[in-house]
Every structure is written in C-alpha cells, then in structure tokens.
Amino acid sequence: MPHIQLLSPRLANQIAAGEVVERPASVVKELVENALDAGASRVDIEVEQGGVKLIRVRDDGSGIDEADLPLALSRHATSKILTLDDLEAVGTLGFRGEALASISSVSRLALTSRTEAQEAAARVEVEGRDMDARISPAAHPVGTTVEVRDLFFNTPARRKFLRTEKTEFNHVEECIRRQALSRFDAGFTLRHNQRVVQSLRPAESEVDKERRIGSLCGQQFIDNAVIIDAEATGLRLWGWVALPTFSRSQADLQYFFVNGRVIRDKLVAHAVRQAYRDVLYNNRHPAFVLYLEVDPATVDVNVHPTKHEVRFRDGRLVHDFIFRTLHRALADVRPDDHLRGAVAQSFGREPEAAVANPAGNPAGMGASLPDQAPPVAGGYANRGGFGVGSASQPQQEWKASDQMAFYQSLNEGGGVASRPDNVSQPVAVTPPRDTDEEPPLGYAIAQLHGIYILAQSRAGLIVVDMHAAHERITYERMKHALAEQDLKSQPLLVPLSLAVSQKEAALAETHGEELQHLGLQIERIGPETLAVRQIPALLRGADTEQLVRDVLADLIEHGQSDRVEAVTHELLGTMACHGSVRANRQLTIPEMNSLLRDMEATERSGQCNHGRPTWTLVTLSELDKLFLRGR
Ligand SMILES: Nc1ncnc2c1ncn2[C@@H]1O[C@H](COP(=O)(O)OP(=O)(O)OP(=O)(O)O)[C@@H](O)[C@H]1O
Ligand SMILES: [Mg+2]
Image 1 (cartoon, rainbow, N blue to C red):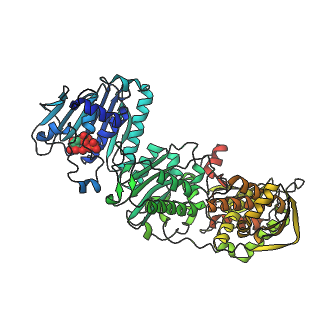
Image 2 (cartoon, helix red, strand yellow):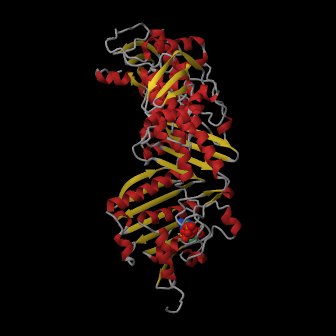
Image 3 (cartoon, helix red, strand yellow):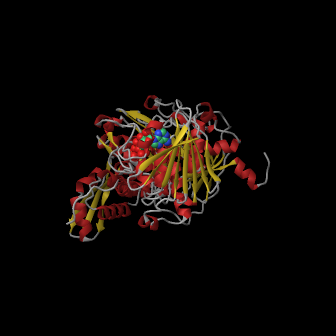
C-alpha cells in the first residue's frame, strides 16, 4: 500500500463535486439557491449551449463583503450556519458551504459582488491545485454575478455523460421552473443562446401567482386545479391540485415543496397517491403544486448532498396530514369547481369570485375557513370556499326518502339488465325558468340514445354520462353506509346457488366475514357450490350472480392484501358498477333532475369510479363558434 497523503483542495473538491454537480442544471440550481438565500428579488439566468459553455446567474441580493470573497469559493465555508443547532433548524436553501467550491473545481468560475456598504465591487477566481483565491477590482451594482464557463473541461469522465444541448437545456428549464414555483416574490428571467425563454415578474397577488403557475405548468393545469389550504398541528399545506379528470400519463407535473425547497419524497408521494386512489385509474398520475410548511426543527434537510430529500421527524403525522387534506379536498370537488373556467369563458370575463376574493384563502386562514361555500349565483365557483381540514359536509341529500325510492326504481326497473331492444324515445321538456339559484348542472331537458342526459344551464349545455354518474353516486353512498356499519343486508327469497371453482369456493369461505361486512352472506354448500343468501339492500335488483362472481374475482386478484379499505372500496366499486343504471334505461325528467342534484351533492362526482369524467359542458360560446355566430 502507498503512503496515506492529504488530497489537494482541488481534487477533494472535484470528488465532492461528483455528488452535487451532475450537469449544467445542477450548477444553475446551486447558483439560483444562493441568490434566493441572499434575498434577491430578481434573478437573471443566462445560459449558452445548454449551459456547458456558459452559465451566468446575476442577482440583486445582499452581495458578499470583499473580505469574505476568498472564503466564498472555499470548501466548508458558509455564512448560513455556525453551530449544530443552526443545522438542526436550518431556514436557508444552502448550508453545506461547498457548492461554489465544488463547481469551481470542475469549471472556470468567477464571482463578482458588491454589498450596500461597499463603494466598489470585487471579483474572485481560484487557480491551481490549491485553489488559491485571486481578487481583483470590478464594476457591479449591489448584488452578485456568478459566471461558470466550460463545465467539466478538466473532468472528461463527467463530460462524457452530458447529453445534447437541447436535453441539457430542458433540465435547466425544469430547474428554473421549480425555483420560480418556490419563490413567488422573486422575478426570474431565463435566456438561452441570447434568446429570452422565460420572463417572470414577482408575483404578489393571488391572481399573479396563478398566472405564474399557468405560464410554468400550463394554463390547462390552473384551469383544472382546486386550491388547497389547510393547517393542523403546526403543519400547513397549501397550493393547487388538479382535478382527477386532468390526470397525466406521466408523473411530470408534480411539485412538492417543503419550506420552499423542492423535494422528492416517498412518504409524500405515497400520501398523495393514496388520496387520489379513489378517483384515478391506476396508471394515471395526478398533477399538483403543493407547499408544505413545517417547523424547520421537525425536518432534517441534511440527508442528501443535493438536498432533494428530507426526513420528517414525525413522518406518520405528515403522511396523515397530507393524505387527509388532499382526500378531503378531492371529495369536496363539486360541479361548481369544474365549471369555474368554463363559465368565465362563456361570459367572456374572469370568474367574479376569483377576482373579488383572489384565489381564495389569504395566508394562514386555511382551516378556519367555512366549509364549501354555497354556490355563487350564476354557477360561479368560489375558489376560496375550500374548507379542507375542517369537518366533512353532511351528506343528507341521499338519505331523503324520495331519492331512495328513485334509486330503488332504477335498480328494480331493469336498471341492471339492459334492454338492447329498447330504443329510447327522445324526451324533452322546457326547463324551469332561469332563476338566480340555478344549480350548477342546470335542468334536464332530454335523454340522448338512452346513454346521456342533456341539461341546460346558464353556461350552456351539460352532457352527463348517466351510468358513470350513477355509478359514482352509488359507490359513494355505499362507502358512506359501510363507514357507518349501515350497509343493510337483505335476505333473498330463494337463495342463489352458484357453481364456482374450488378455489373460489374456498375463498368465499375464508373471506366470509369480509363478505358479510359488504352485505353479502355466502355459504359454501359443496366443494364447488356456493349459496348466496343475503345481498346488500342497496343492490336489490342487481344481477346477483354476476355481482358475486366479480367480487370473488376481485378477491382472488387482490389476495390477502393488507389494504383492506382499498380492497373493500374496489369491491364496492364493482358492486356499484353492476348496480347502476345501464344504457338504454329510460329516465323521466324528474329522475334525470334528481340524478343531477345528487351529483352536485355527492363527493367526487366529477369522475366515475375509474377516473373518467361523468359530465361535460359545451359552453354557449362554443356552440356559437360552431354556428359562426358573433355574440
Ligand atoms: N449570490 C450570492 N449572494 C450572496 N452571497 C453568496 C451568493 N452566493 C454565495 N454566497 C456566499 O457564499 C457562501 C458559499 O456559497 P456556497 O453555495 O458554496 O455554500 P452555501 O450556500 O453556504 O451552502 P451549500 O453548499 O449548501 O450551497 C454562502 O454561504 C454565501 O455566504
Ligand atoms: Mg449554496
């Protein structure tokens, strides 16, 4: 073995750089974080050739005192923490005191800076294997500019991993997107090869913030998002989550910030996925921009050199809080929220509520807000009305006896067994006169091909997929009943005998209790025979045989899953699907209106159990466009 020797500062820094400086975007991240830590209100980023040739970040922050300049580029030197206590409650983005040292060991870096107190600016560069600092006078306003040229010029192994200019720049753009989402109070400009790619002014009002999100994440996202703001036990979660019907095929629109730091975290990801479980197809991904604020002392940010991960002191509490808040918010989504953008468009102006009460919740009001505000006249959605984190909305509507009768009549009257020979007669009536209290989904005017309900609302034409909508309503009712241990079972007059496989028979036997809990009483009366004795009262009239087979198939597929609730809900979903009104079922106008009112009152009614939309709006202006009609 050769003798042990101390590494030269440059080599030590190059090794450290291996962890933090992966590509140009990592440099941009570190430099912009420094600018934000310095209190900048403006950050200008300039990049050439994807950042490989040049990265220049200029800010109007506090600047660095000339005497501190030699230290700025050396390792283990930081102005952000001094003691272990500081580290345990760190409030800045940086704290390791090594980003600049690392970057300057694998590029040609120059930093120019001036503080308010100084007359003139100074510039620092490092050279040689000892990375000695060289200071020279320079011209610069208060603030700092860091220039990084020829990244990886001296580390060919790293350079080989660089991708095309376009790919590298995409990473830079994504990095700026995250930073700009993390700090609304700062303005950002991004230039690539002398072309302005992004220019964002500081966003102060809620409207400005939404505009910024629109330009960073797409207007579609913000049009389809609901506002979250909840506080509990020292935690606050706020931001925007997309409606389930705006799901994505990739997890590419998911931003989660903890105390202003963008992170990727398994615990957070799981909590979010669980909150969407009931409303999204398995292979779809939700979209969100969310901010979690916690006491810095309860989260460890010193977990990974890139600081993309954190560790919560009480992970369970955080998981629970995120899950509950989002779950509640998604359950509370009503047609009003979907209609927000559409109505505004239809009337050619901004939604009043959104303007008068810009984007809702002023900071800190979260949990104290009232629950879902009543619909604003004209169907405008009150975006501020999200009382997430507060008591759930009582679901009295479906308990009303006339609605029960309606459902029973749906289920009994051939709602399950479809009648293909039944060619539906078009039904139409004049809707009630326009009043200020028009419900968001309007009034039914006709049924189309036995599949869709057409309704007239102020905004235009509402088209409802009646099976999908009824499926969700039934499902939510069943869940509710189940939660209250109230899923009444009803004996069948003649028990239904079912021929099944041995495996299925055994399964029904071992899961007897679970099935009973679902309102199904099934007995094994032979090696391959089951007798169904009781079914949920909710589903009388349903195709019992199909129902039991589907439930067993679900059980086989999910096996001994410990996610009892998920399985239960999936089983309920299957039951709801079979128990719901099928195509070609003729509904009367009062029945259709009843369904519309139920949708308005039902949690998650905007999408069926598989995440497909249950209804859509064709606005008057869209209709006008079809007929080239100027309004
Ligand atoms: N844009 C800037 N404006 C003002 N001060 C800066 C700026 N960039 C760097 N500094 C100063 O230089 C020091 C070193 O920066 P560097 O990024 O290397 O470390 P850090 O930010 O303290 O920690 P980390 O390695 O976690 O980023 C900072 O602590 C800060 O005092
Ligand atoms: Mg830093």
